[in-house]
Length: 126
Image 1 (tube, rainbow, N blue to C red):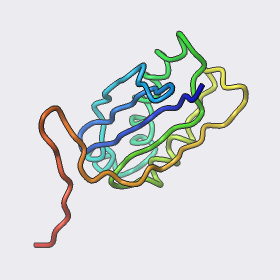
Image 2 (tube, rainbow, N blue to C red; image 1 turned 180 degrees about the vertical axis):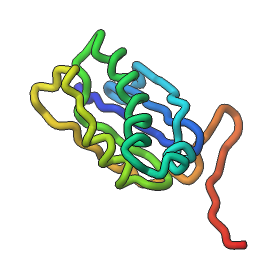
Image 3 (cartoon, helix red, strand yellow; image 1 turned 120 degrees about the horizontal axis):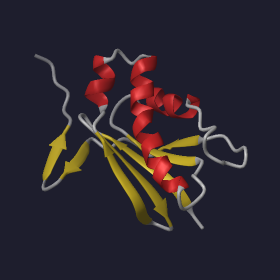
Image 4 (cartoon, rainbow, N blue to C red; image 1 turned 45 degrees about the vertical axis):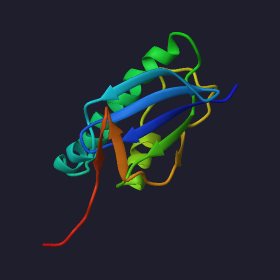
């Protein structure tokens, strides 16, 4: 069985999905995204608030299955910082067979879809 967590970080929200054999079984949209991380100054508090959405999703997963220790992260910015925040978090309340959480960065996705609209991230100089 191939199970993992997919984390897609947008400007205003983060979508967390528990995927088994290419099918999303649990999905949660956490109202904390890149703009919130920036507003908090990319500090410990920002990392904690970001990881809260992951923990919330893992609580649901743990009711039916062992939580995955392999997470896939998709974000247009701050991939290293977010990956480290995820790996630093404590998952002691979940049974993981002692395996540490590992984060795989799946490139950057500059265009994250929201409903029928697409929010594209651009950078420019004035």
